[in-house]
Every structure is written in C-alpha cells, then in structure tokens.
Length: 124
Image 1 (tube, helix red, strand yellow):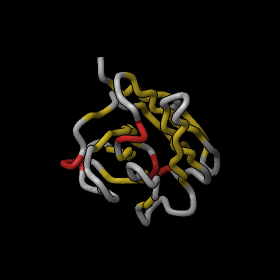
Image 2: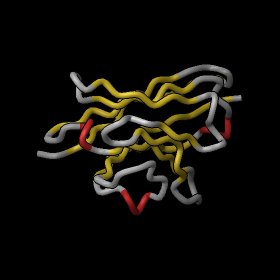
Image 3: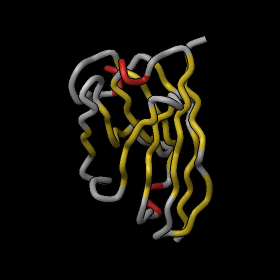
Image 4: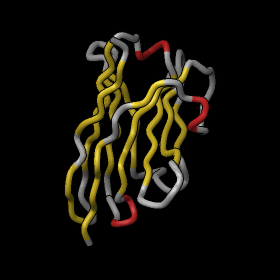
C-alpha cells in the first residue's frame, strides 16, 4: 500500500524544537518531490518546505526559512522537518506530501499523496 504516515507532533513551549517524521511505504522517496505543509483552523493549507526529486534541492517559505529544515533518509524512506525557534503562530496540523513533478513545487495541487497530519501546538 502506498502511503505517507506523519508523526512527531506535540505540545512545545515557544522557542523550543520538534522533529516531524514522514514515513513512506510503497514508494521510493528520492523519486518524488517531498513537501511539508501546515493548516491552522479556518486557514488555507500553507506551503512550508520542499525537497525536490532527483537533485534534492530545497526551498522554504519566508515564514519558516532559517528555522525549519527539510531532509530525507533514503535508507529509512523517511522525510523529516526539523523545527527550531518555534512560535505560537506555528500552531497547526502539519502534513507531508509527495509530488511527481520536477522542480520546487509549492502549490498543494501539485501533490498527489498526503500524510494524515500531525498536530503541533506551541504555547506562549
């Protein structure tokens, strides 16, 4: 079965760190572009970071650049989102997703497979 499973969310104080994981099964993550998104209540899904297929180039949204890092472990077929200096406004459900498109895809419509999401709550 082809699926992505998100994990690693939780409650953290402002200024803290979390590492989210996206475990892939049934697909080779290096053959896909992998992205992270988040969605807060009442808001649209927001692009955070992408790791392109093939070369593994990365791109980040302005809101998280310098604080978040996307990486992948091909052997473990897992993609990570390392989050530092968390802020209350980072509170949301976080999703990983896979795209077959080349380049640095930022639109959710470019992604064909999604994880179930993991809740991140940052307290002030």
